[in-house]
Picture 1 (cartoon, one colour):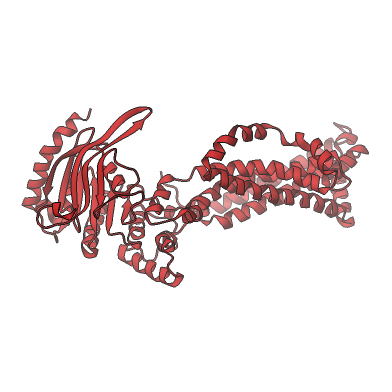
Picture 2 (cartoon, one colour):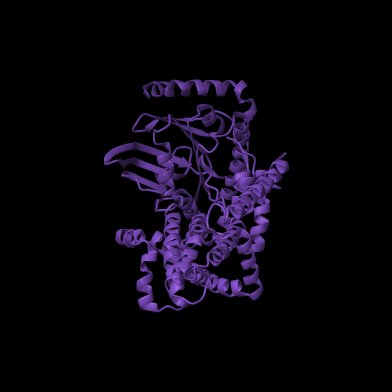
Length: 267
Length: 261
């Protein structure tokens, strides 16, 4: 399998081979995505950008094994993805925290599932709360937390079971611009430090370029890949100062030209 | 400000109660015959007598035992079957019309049948109560289990959760809210079961006191028994509420937090 890996000697961790997906909505077949060929390299942050409803999330769901591809196949580490791919962690726009558990309880869930002894769970949760900046909020329930803190809690829960791949589906869409940028900085730093492979779906071009090592541009309905570009920014980029970066401006402008027609076609 | 308005409400409530009682006392014998509406002072006196003689406690305890046993029995079975059917789609689908048919039957109509089957002892009242409570708790539990967020389950599955994890960490806790709604709704119905059972056939319990007093044209006794029943219902409701707050601490913080739209 690995000999047909992508260029530059990378071994694809996740591979979409001629993937298409049809749903049945009210008896009508609906093609969500078609002809997807994509290789996700281990350790990279791959962003998927495109208008809403073009099937970006469908790719993540298939990578997680929540449902199967109608055509083609999704390969994870050389084997077809089976239901519930335990190597991935999923984070969505709504955080799906359990409302009846406080922050500590929510972060502890994956550890409890793993069957860790209680003392270890407590220690690890404490550590994770510090990592995501939630120290002191352990006894708060999700409904007492602000949007940003809920995201941090969901992130800590995600990191608690230490999946090698993170699937993020517009996780910061509901946050305000400032908080969003801070979360972008933190998530990038964190994933680099922990060596995670990330598929990050967003409809925001700026976010896609700011976070991504590579950026996949989606168009159309049914959605398909329009272009895959390398983001020509250094791995240790300063997201706060990107606005002034020449390369950043150039690439967002280029990608915008790719995306803009698709936006216009929307209605 | 908050405290002030609260005391004011309590004062107004007390005034309302006093108004009703005094109005009742004054109209008794003037606007309506005392034979039919008795009078608060006489009721209070009889209540006091029954308290001193322990009569109210004796009969109250019988009714409480019936209502509580039926409540626990019906509630427990309702929860277990609710969780089971909530998880077993096929069985639920097959049984659905039969359950709904039986649910629409006023359960007190079963009382004569229960007398035939179980006699006129205390077990008849317990089973009648349990039948009534069962349906309320069952339907709420069932709905609660079915209403569990599939996304939350999927997220736990990705973490490697097995069926047991999903059941105990997501399904049951998220159904708790519904279960308590069922339990809270059941309290007055549990009393209905017990009292109706006693009215039909018994020689003990508050329902018996009620029927017995009515049989002797003792309106004061009827009202006193009614007040006893009311007091018991009030206590039971308060108890369930207390347990509810204990069992769902996240709910309380929900109502306490600052509102924001």
